[in-house]
Image (cartoon, rainbow, N blue to C red; front, side, top):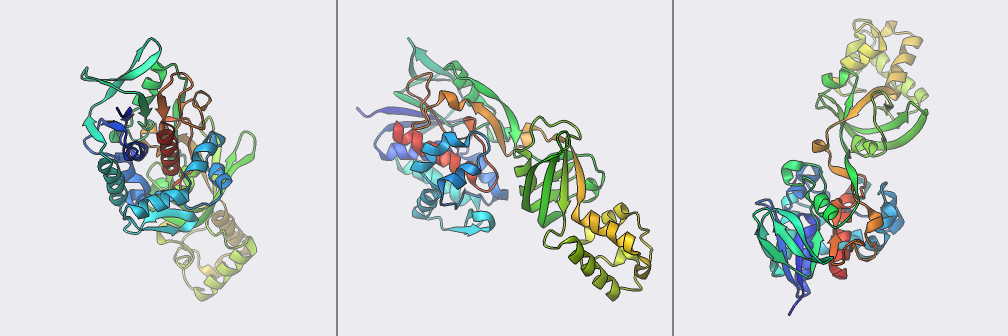
Length: 410
């Protein structure tokens, strides 16, 4: 008789693991509480699905996992981004590499990734049922299977928990996996939002709602220690509550114990130019617009939406003629363009986080196999484990690598 395996959760990790086990001839039951599979994969990368990050060195991968990255050494070494790329291209989904080594389907449609994972699992003969697993069946210290919310029981030789974390609960990830892990004696680090937008103090954020800035540099300062905790270059977004976008989401995972005004974000709107170069650029623009009002002379330099905000912050009257702007006034303008400050008041709620930081303690999982050290036959994969990475495809790579590691170990 073939070995029976239950996989809980049909997300990225669950579909990858179940398909791999099915291909090897195991009797696999995949249990998913939603009507549709991989709900969260559908909304990653703004619906385009940033499926992995095309880095070739394992240390570069680990460097992008600020929480417990070393734990993933074994899983990454067995299944790297190149393996993920080969997997999807073999499944008929052509991929492309964009800025920052981010990998997307050529179609820019997350549904193509979901369909490929779904087909992989189904074609491998995996049985699937809809239901919510609420209990592990443990008899005399041995794992025997799972019990569902409706009272039904399913027995197996191994159980793989791939339920995700607590982010985006509308997609079904409400922390069920943490409760199952606790039943087996596991410690669960309290889930916190990670890769999450930020509430900010400045009222101008609301004025700039919807404005996306590309090619800016941000620096995050801890105002208690006056130390820089994060710096990067890329894209960010202003919202009605504060700031969001790839740069901000990555920055949020470096902010510990967030309290009002503990962190400041300094935005360099023109990182390619030094202060002196920017001043010369402004002087050239002003020469060409000598008779214009100050507020009408910045359109070549900045997105239209941000101009009134910048003018307000300089304290220069909008109606001041450009030829009357003094050297001191210009210096104020340059300083604001090179150092636009926003004050962080709090993280947005966990429901808005792309991923959660926290989960099943890595000290209680064998890094070579993803098997529980507390209960034989129990395995973990994906975001339910206490690991989390930056944006850019790294979190999905963790899901795929840990899923393959667990499946091959089983």
